[in-house]
Amino acid sequence: MTAEQFLSEKLRRFSLLDISLVKAVYFLFGLLIFVLYPALESLDWWFYGLLGLAAAFPLWLHFFTFEGSYFDKGKAYLKSNSPALQVLLFMTQMFFALMLALLIPWLVSGEWWLYLVLIFVLAIKPMTTTVFW
Image (cartoon, rainbow, N blue to C red; front, side):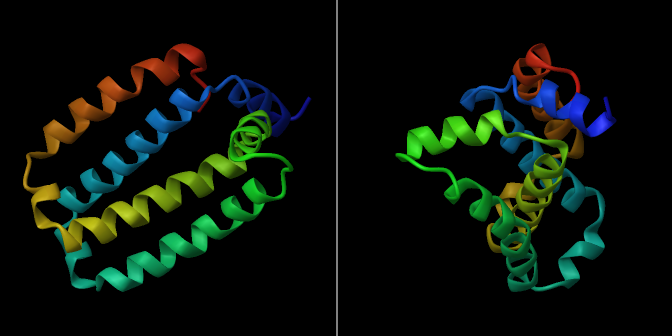
């Protein structure tokens, strides 16, 4: 069994709530990066938006290849969760967080440790499902 197969099996245990919390954690991680590295403010918001769309496009294609209603597609998407899809999800959420941090400056008005605490709190539920994400 390869590492990809092993991790894919573990990631398929996620529920819709778990994926939502993982997306929130990835988004907050993007905000944390923006707070810690102020040089990221030098790029325009549309650049981060383009990067986010480029990372999200394969996820959309993967989602819409399944048949049925959106609920059925969501269930099939969760059953096909893999490390490669998690990397794309992370990049999508991080780039959209960077874009929104430029468009809505109050999102990054907190201290860095506040984002870290929120990340730890939101990661508790997905970590109880599997520690391999």
